[in-house]
Length: 217
Length: 226
Image (cartoon, rainbow over all chains, first blue to last red):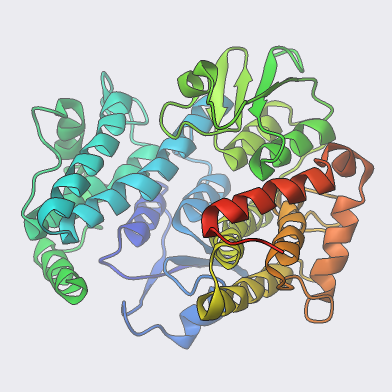
């Protein structure tokens, strides 16, 4: 079918999850780095609808939207399946992945940049969202069961990115006492070699979040 | 799994999200029991089946709830995969289909909604954005009669209701969002989908839907609608 290229930004958890999917499948790819605030004509030509990273180029195909890409990667390269085979389990994995993207990441970021009373409220709301994920991981090693899967990759922003947001936002969301299972999963996830090797440096992420928060306050 | 065994759909007559799931079920010839929610009084069943979002539609299959309309359609397509496949088999085409359904929900719908609820200069800005996004959606057709190719598929049933809604919004706020001159292919596509007998049969009554949305508009803007 052709070589694989990923247009991405290393600080983006949406791009990292695509790299994780490819690495788990043993797929070689070329990474084309995009500057976050200086979008190239190359990116814009391959994703005119959203104008965002990540985009995967595979032969003549261009696929955008990170979870759609991970689904695509799982579809094309059948070894080491990421998405559950059972239709009901599949729907649950996709549901929680969407929930994580729609509510948890946004909620954590809102709490990070908020101040005063609004911050207290945002923290409570973010914790409430995390409590749903806690219930999903209870009694399991990974969201995918004994091996990491689609949902682990979707929620994989938590160990590093949430940690960085907590630092910059001077708050604690992933409370080990309140969310013991999610906390334990978080510790284990980032230790997996394939996961670890795609992570951006924490200092760079912290610096990026610090600048972003400053820009909105 | 016996086809049609224990399939229930919790919906609402005016909900486009419930409508798209019904379209999927009907195209696939799946028998189901429809449970109408008495909004805004959400039933205990709905809250039990979707405690996270507390929203409809929810499909209950053999006692197991599936929420989020696009996920429900994918689930249905997978369980009853031999009956009228909605998603393409080819991974690249499948990814494209998921992309356009997502784009409709994330870009087209909010812009149309924002046009509906805003006024003055802000409304003009949102209307322009809605039209741009609808034009982008049109490009996804790639010159075919349907997103599914020669027959109605996943994107068609996910996105077509926006044509109904844009018309309603247009009537209430007096702005034409779906322009035949600027979006001829999109208009032809909408006609093609909405004239299909199975699709047409599920549509809520036009006048009732218009009045329902007029009421919505009055509530949201406090304006006396035209």
